Image (cartoon, rainbow, N blue to C red; front, top):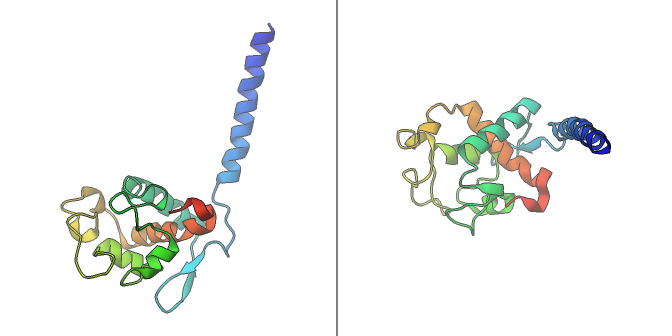
Length: 157
């Protein structure tokens, strides 16, 4: 009898706790946190909660297999943290820079195209997942990448 009640209590506790955790982990970021750099001139934009959710989902579906936690499987020395992105040529520490990279990826120094080895819009024939990605999707993914250092701090890249 006690075992039955303890299982019931555990079951109820788990679901009540899950409901609160789910609510707490929803995208409830303030406007200051959702403000990110839009382009090389320093102009900023505020991501909508929908863009944040969409960016997270799309990053998970199209990028996370190779960029787990902001690290790069192909080159562990270059992560997706803001500092590493700022040293790339051209700079990739803003929405426009990342969107450009996802359309036409180049090496870290910007000298050579890597479209044949990195998923991109220009290589959608090789990477079918990229065929349906729109500019809005690219902006959401870039927003997710730039938002993570604010949300996860040292756990990102």
